[in-house]
Length: 92
Image (cartoon, rainbow, N blue to C red; front, top):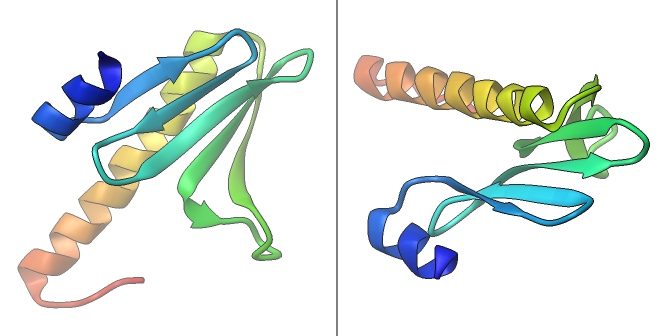
């Protein structure tokens, strides 16, 4: 059901499991949070500093805070891309 909703709307949505939650739209994995004793948040739109995984956003005591960190990172990336598209510049 959720996958169908994402495909129909194209809007990002969370898919929640007991120890891992993933944020995706109809085309992309945008980020995820993993429970390891605390909630680790990852930005799926950027690599980490060594280029061998996703950018780590931090560890958080609550799932809601970890999800908010992922959403904020994704929104900031979208804003930068939108501004660069309007100005004619390309930022990778």
